[in-house]
Image (cartoon, rainbow, N blue to C red; front, side, top):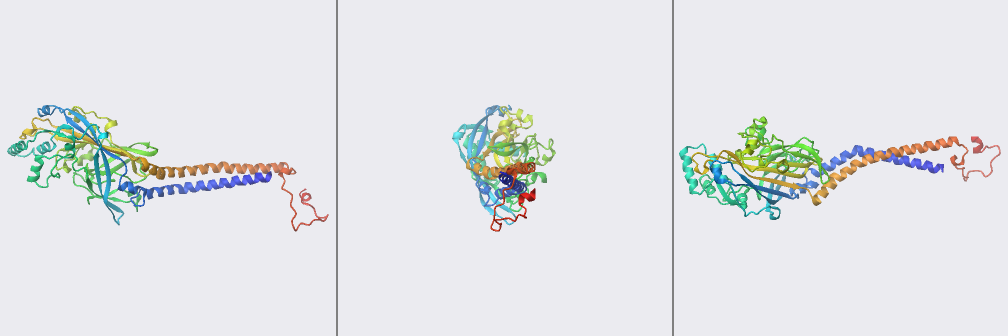
Length: 503
């Protein structure tokens, strides 16, 4: 009985020490193991888990477009406030992939990123064949650009516009507005000033958006420094752009907007957007979860599109109008185009008051990015922007009537996507579940070691105490010695036995 207790105590002690050692090893080596797994799987390397996700984005992306139909075009020409009605959404399945992937010796990789769009009538509220009355973007833009020309030149141009049957408002189908329609004005401009317009044959808001690339990006692979993975090294060979009025505004900062370096802090993230012609900074809002994966949510600060008066660092993006809109004319052939949040969300109230029919709301119009902070991989995102045109009466251009100066919303769109299905399962298993198990195991082993070691010590002390209180109790005695080949069968009377010696 005593031997069994002693063996149990020793077993518990050994098990407790083993748990202590395992827990200690995991405590010391666990973070390094997890970090090694993360680093191997998020860097841009053909052997990493995220490489295929980076090269051919498997996330189901959707482009959702909402158009603003002008309900009172004749009245607007007479000086009335524009009244608009949102039409849509018109939804397109978006496929993204990269070509011309070239690795360089300086820990960078270059690529061309493409997108393909396919109309999804089952997800849309309307068809591409529906007609919508909208501002004539080409003509009204040209009118504002010609405002400072001599009066007689503008009258001649106005006559030319009349000959081309140009009017301030057009009635076109959704498909034509987005993907292009033949316009005699475009043909005339291309004939008179070859190369001025990037459009050939057709003009449409998104005519260069489908089956085209967003420029040659060169980004860091993270093979030598994981903190620089996905950070843009250059865009179209440029370290900075020349669209804006300050070095800070011209800088190409952050990533290409697809992934970020791992181990993010809850502060901010940056990315360069070729569509906006600038780098953009989003700020941390809150922590959360997306389908079991911990995330940081980043949103646009109110200063993102603030003017230089309200936010001096944005002075370089001017000439500015009200806060809440970004003048992108410098990278759009000097056309009076502006981008903003949908429905002028977070913009100067005067912009909203100038157009009837807008209803901004945080739930519907605020953009966000939910990113897994350990890996820097977005789990869920929705980037929403609105395209606007500044239009007004231009003396000498009769087609502009008496239009009052207004930043006119044309459309707003959202690019949204989230990780799901087998991609989410693989991501969750390798980069969330396994690291979590390792993290929990260290505390489980350490927690078990303490009661096991204490139990072993208590059992040993209990046995020792019982032996001291009952020295002649058979239960506390050691078993008698068994005779061996060298033990004499008969003892000499003068040789004391073990019991006599102990007594």
